[in-house]
Image (cartoon, rainbow, N blue to C red):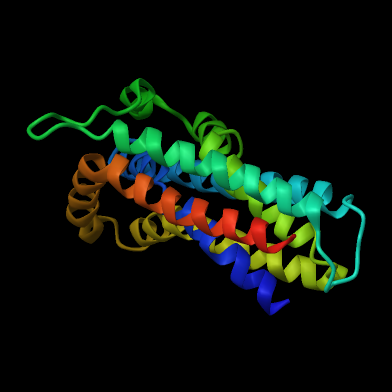
Length: 223
């Protein structure tokens, strides 16, 4: 199971270091309905990650088992395709970087965060976690890695828990910290929001490049 955990850790980190949902969570924490919307957002984020990775794990488990030392062309091909798509996303993110002196563009829906309630925040987070193309590809790669590893039920559960905890921590940590010490967290959260807005595209481009290359490498190694 150790090798599987090693395979999914960078994928979970790729979901965790997603500036847009972190920015959205911070904006909710700085909004008039901070507690309700932020908790709803965290629950939706967790649910979206769980649904996505479980679905792809189940799909991965359908791939016929083979000798552990034998080549796995089907799983290898899937990983190469997923890695290539991640590399394309990396290129797209890199090209979307703001020019020097230019303000980074954020999704228009962020302007409506102040008017959101807990239910809408939960739905938004679920979409960002489970439907967003980048997170969907990372969850797919993790699910294939777990589903094709020939693990037992208990080992699969442990691997998925590790993946979900790491993937969700970047949203969970600021939300929990704010609920514990809201006054002290307001300043640091605003500073973090500003940095993420300015560096969003660059962070994601580099991250997707590294993970994409790793997934392609894993795919090639499956042959």
